[in-house]
Length: 484
Image (cartoon, rainbow, N blue to C red; front, side):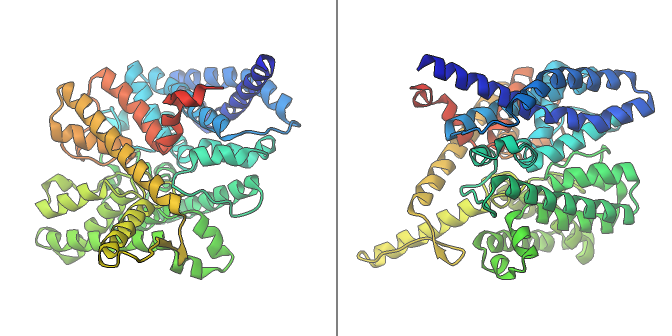
């Protein structure tokens, strides 16, 4: 029995090495750019980890290529978390070589892969261009999911691969839109790529340069928000670019399975999707309230432009800003702060609690009220015009409680480090939900640079936990997981 466990652990280590083999692929474009621009430090920053990982991952990939792997849920939890943690550590090397401290470099790397979009860097434009491209590509791959891409292009994980996707893809319900999980992953990646290319073309049409358009299209579709400019998209001061970005941030926050349904001509799936309708309704109502409050400040057209952009940015957890919303009327700030608790749709690149969980809790609250009126009645939560699973309600309630508990703990630890309470709460919300946006110290004109080193390490860990939907990581701290 002990020998079988050792064999299984050895196989899992090889799978882990094979999964990390996708990091050198992401590093190729920044390496080429660094070589073309003569950025010597960046050449070393990308070349050394690439060679090291290739030497380690290639033999593992070849040895597993013809094997049939039976990965269970326990394997999936561990593999996905360790993959993300090691990817963040390896991804910090270019930031470290660019002159950042170790804690800052790890924080920046975790931000990019987890698509949080925060930064410790005061002058973004001073970073090497190759590093800008690395940030954007890491955002893009982190948005759709490192493991999802691996499953799509590594048939060796076709058997048991769904356990990996279940541990990584956000949302309370995981769905295979085709019988084969690898085909499902490829379709989702294809939709992601097409939307990114379309956005790239629109940014070019709006007057962006090719490099800016490439980086911003990658980060916008990833719901990440990293920018090549200190002022973000506000640097371009273009209503067209703001409008295009607003639309695509909303599209990135929708469940990607819906795009496959639309390509099949199943338009009713979008119309009947409870979460999508709630997501768009929340956006319209929130943007409307903010726009009304901003009319005296910007006029009708400007109020609609800034309200729509900022609402889409927060609800999709992209987290960018084209105006200093901390100077807006109190009601507008309150709506934006409330949206930090919402998030995008399940199965999207967005973070946060997810709209579907709010819908389930809201519907269950209505059922409890009706139960008081009709004690003998039988009530259920209906989603997509179908009766939802009963255990879904318990899962959502448990997730909600865990989410709030983590935010409370991070807030208290951050406040104990000397950060004011409101900024601590804002940072905890932003980090746990990978929201990016924040208030106080991390507002539109702020950064995480002033936080103590140990808090940045805490934030790096919590970002990964939030990106992996809490349970994937928290289950590893349960003694029952490690029992035979």
